[in-house]
Length: 322
Image 1: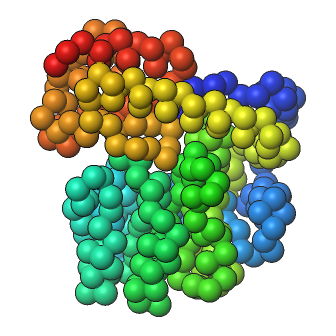
Image 2 (image 1 turned 90 degrees about the vertical axis):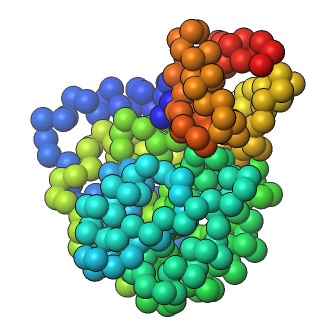
């Protein structure tokens, strides 16, 4: 339901966490500068281009605190990640929600128009939560060029690792060209560290410096740092796990489609049932087999890809004629 990775931590990662637990009586770094250095080296960026925080949503909050003036606009498509309205409330921004296009796509033209009218920041989620739709590199780069240079662009790529490599926008290179762009990513989804709360962003050094002014001291657990370092070392195994989840996703898509359900193509670890009139029916069927899903009355249903047995339960519950 929360789009978590269904697989437990890799054994090597769990061992490092257990080993690090013996020192949790000590404070972590005042600011997570070691983790910032580790992530920067991994990405091939200088340290001053990287920010880290409590999940990607934590970095997003810091960025909006640094850039949005109370009462000014924060523009994003809707529906979207449920945290975006909360971020607007927390920063005093005026939430400007642009309806999605048919097929679950974000209306970039509409978002750009609202940004040009009166906004301090825009957020684009790619791939999109909750519909799983992907914006192409050409679409995104054209959109970024339309946004005023003094407007913050937050490109939320929490699920980018589930996108086929040939289809992933090379978004990190854009931060060198666009000083108002922040690319957000997380270790919560593909890396299976949701409980560790580690996200990171890449931005022009001037923007990164402004964002870092809103860091909380001692906010990054020492165990989180250990878990991220160990996960980065096990990149190949983690990529194997992503391929496993993607294969399960496609298996579930085929099964649901064969049963007559309207399922949008997904580039994430979840599926969108584009069944606005049948949300309650889907929810009731899943309840009977003990499966939880995110229901959006009048819009559709988001189904997280879980372990094979859970996925089989979904297919069984939704296999009967409608």
